[in-house]
Image (cartoon, rainbow, N blue to C red; front, side, top):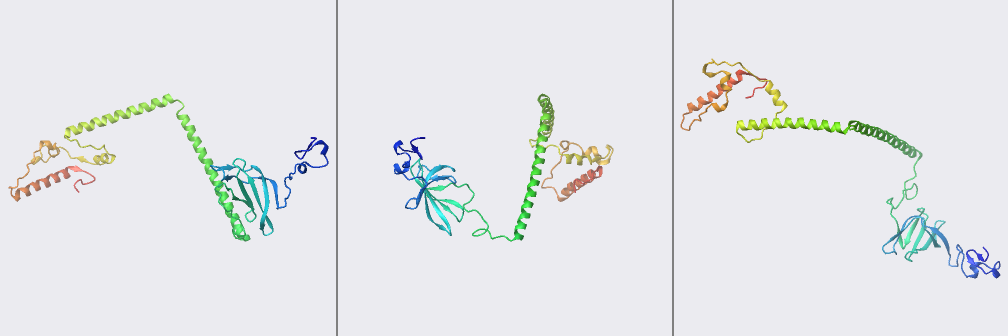
Amino acid sequence: MQGFNMGRYVPPELEGTTSGNRLNKKRAPGTLRKDGTQTVRFEMPFAVWCHTCKPHAIIGQGVRFNAEKKKIGYYYSTPIWQFRIKHAACGGYLEIKTDPKETAYVVTDGGKARDYGEGKDRVREGEDGLPILTPEERERRREDAFAALERKVEDREAVKDNAKRIEELYRSRERDWEDPGAVNKKLRNTFRRERKLRKREDDATESLKERLGTNIDILPEAEQDAQRAKLVSFGSTNVNAPNGTGSSNFLRSPARQTVKTPSRSKSSSAVKHSESKKDALRRRLVGSTRAALNPFG
């Protein structure tokens, strides 16, 4: 465009005789100054927190600035450069320098690099890092890497199997609930049957408690008790047995039998006679039953 040179206005009568920067007494970007500084285009290598902003604001990675570049030292023969940039949002300055030793950038003033959780130092092989590995150690680590890769392959196969099983379960569920009305009807019928069964069991338990005249909770019938009861069979009824030794006598309800408790004034012979009667009753009961386990043992 006529009248412009390097972005600065140059009158037509002076065009070709001078530059826009010289005419406006400005230094071109990138020109080295007498103090050793120069203006360059600098791009943020990572996100940085600006401490001048209140509250602290973050400058995203890749944001570009006109930075003042300056050489501040050497790492062996490699120059260390410092970049001073101005944050337009708050007017504060940040200083970032190169770190040839770690091949990284370091924020030295005005802010702080964002912590990505990767740790401050990166482990490298060589100086100030891991020792230099021998060929044998490298081969061993390579084999370990292959072993880890094989484990990853096995894990992927397990994930595929699990996914297949989950898919089968989903299909089974969809098949079972294809007709929700029929399934609900089946569930209701099952619930009604179980409810009636529980009602009969509760009524039988209450009736037994009324006959026994007790309020003690009666446990439900156990399978083990039913099996033991099947192993017991009583002898035949003998009404003509002397002294009432028939099974019809000792299997009577305890309510019809009256047991007299001996008084303290009775003699020891009466106590012995009562004990002998108990032993005789126990012997008759054992002799009249046939069981796999002695209930009095």
